[in-house]
Structure formats: structure tokens, C-alpha cells
Amino acid sequence: MKIAVDFPSVAYREGPQQVLALASAIEEIGYDEIAAFDHVVMGYPSQDRRTIYPAEMPILEALMLLANIAAVTSKVSLSTEVLVLPQRQPVLVAKQISTLDTLSQGRVRLGIGVGWQDSEYDALEEDFSTRGKRMDEAIDLLRSYWQGGRIEFRGSYYDSHDMGMEPVSPQGAEIPIWVGGESPAALRRTAEKADGWMASGVTDEQALSCVTDIQRMAEEFGRDTAEIGFQLMLQPPPRSDEDKLFYTNLDAIAERAAVVKAMGFEWTSVNATAVFQAGARSVDAMIEQLDLIHTRIRTEVD
Image (cartoon, rainbow, N blue to C red; front, top):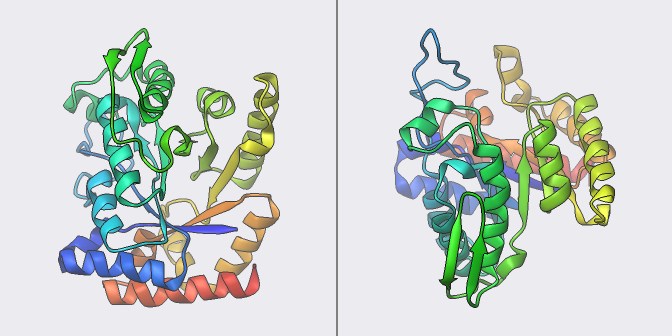
């Protein structure tokens, strides 16, 4: 089972060199991937606005963060978990991801989702109501540009006529695209178009049900289900003080990792922001705890 680390933006408080030192340490420890969380802005709560994360939560821009990390690493793969694709201009995203794949020598995995925050879409002047349909079309557009050559793309939302994007990156049109989300549309999108599915805030029963649904629909689309990968976050984002203690308990971590592997998930992810919240309140402390977590999982699960 491969293990990603969801990178903690809070590391910025110790300066850019410590951000890069943390990324280098994650690779040196032996994790398989560094993943970047994505929100451009967060709304303050109001009577008619729901919030999940506080507006004061520090979030470094995902693709700029990964570009910096690419420069100080050489083996670990780089992903977004997940990029809110429909609130970004997809041709620009195609170029950014292709460039990241080129400069990292083929280490990119693109996780994408439609998001939930309509106020963020408003701030970026994108249509929240059409995000799902635009997501489907954007996936096809990205791959069209990544394959190189002359592009002819006609869609309901995006058009590209007689255009090209060079250089073609090491992975080209094979840059893996994984979809996050548990809605019926997200599961259908995974089954029809994606290379994998990323699950986070779901129960084990829900996760397994989603996997079954994706595999069934993939067969209906004529796809080989073995081509679709699956990832489950080791623990959902913590919502209580008790949840935040999870990453201090190495026994519980190892037991949980064994369960995730036994469920058939090829990937899991460790939430380093939750490690910070659990008491590792500096970059050095996070490195130490991430090392202990990795050693324990690899020793007892692999």
C-alpha cells in the first residue's frame, strides 16, 4: 500500500526554508507522495453561508506549493488532494500540470473535485451551478492538450481551435487523474473518465459501497475495473478533540492502516495538518512524528 502525506500549509509560519525542509524530509522518510490541499479563498460564516474550515485557516496555493516541492525532491510523487478544477480556467490548469510534470520528471498525479463552497466560485467569477458538467468536459480538454500536437476541441463550455501546447510532459496524456467526492455524479465520473477515486470523509461502509458502485459502472462503460485505483484517507479530517489525538497513537494508526489495506485500497494518506493539531507544533516535531508513523505502518502493515 502506498502512503501519501497531505502537506500542512501551517509550515509556512517557520519560513520557506522549513517548508522545503519538511518536503525533503517526507521524501527521505520514505513516503510515496506529497499531496497539496486546495482552496483559493475561504468564506467567513454567515446566516446564509455554510463553512467547513475557518476563513483564518492558512492554505498555500496548491500548484505553486508543489512546484517548489518538486525542486527539492526527486522520487516522491506530487498530487493535489483535491484541486477544485471547475473554479479554475482549464487550459491554464492543463499548462500548469504539464509544466509541473515536466519539471518533476513525470511525478504528477492530479486529484480533482467539484468543491462545495459557492462563495469561492463567486470570488473567482466561475459558475457554481454548472461545475459538474464543466468538470466532465475539462477532464477531456486536459487530456487533449496533454497529448500534444494540434488541438481541436468543441464542447458546451470550452472550445480550443487549432491550438497546441508544448512541451509534452513525460507522462503526456497519461498523467493520472483521480476524482474525489462521494456524490453519484463523482462516482459516475470516476467510472467513466478517471484513473482512480480518492475518499476522505466517509465511513468504511460508505467507502466500500462507493467502490462497488464505481466498479459496476466502469463495467457498464466497457472499462477494465483493474485500471481504476482507490485511495482512502487514514482518518477523516478531525472534527473533535478526540479525533485530533489519533495521530499520537501509533498502535491505533497501525491498526487503522491494516484495515484500510485489508479493504483493498492501494493508497492511503496521512493528514499532516492533523499531526500538527495533535501536538507536533513545529516542522521538526512533525518530521519526527511522521517518521514514527511511517516506520510503524511499514513495519506492521507491509
